[in-house]
Image (tube, rainbow, N blue to C red; front, side, top):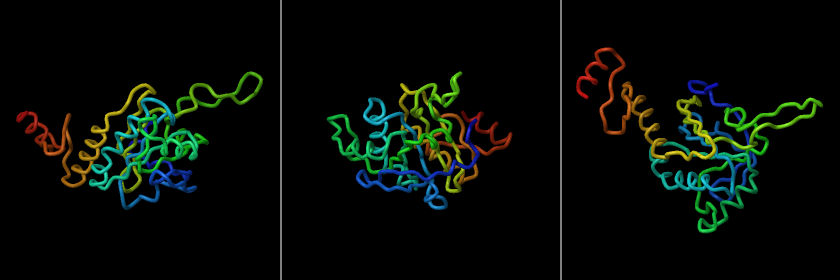
Length: 209
């Protein structure tokens, strides 16, 4: 089930902030009313595609911040594993230099509530609790507005890395809609023409393009 148009699931979990400090009770609700949030899940620390995405978000962090957007990452690893990875230099496979929060979802409840856990619990014929699939998160990305409503979500399978510039485009499109009351057509980018959500508006836009 998609979360778009719904309140983002509420949670409190440990996280590493500023690349060096573990806090026990981190919540996205801390940003409600103040900032929009780009919340993303990745499968696992100390892997291969994941550091490219995490570092790519860091490289674009100033662009998100200039738009009033908080970037937050999450995986099913522990906070101690996050911290160890954050303390590992890039040339040794680490993500040293990342400053936005990384949430530790070791209980897998956050990933499950957001619908990105790559497996699920079930029972064997003997009645034993088992897990089918991978106990890690898919590459889910959720753009959450200042009211805590999910406005965009994408979920990639494990091998498929994200395009971070597309995440910025989503932010720009949402903020344009909020500021101007227009809607954004296919391939819209900041600075391009949008259109009014009326038949005449669509006709005018299509005639010009």
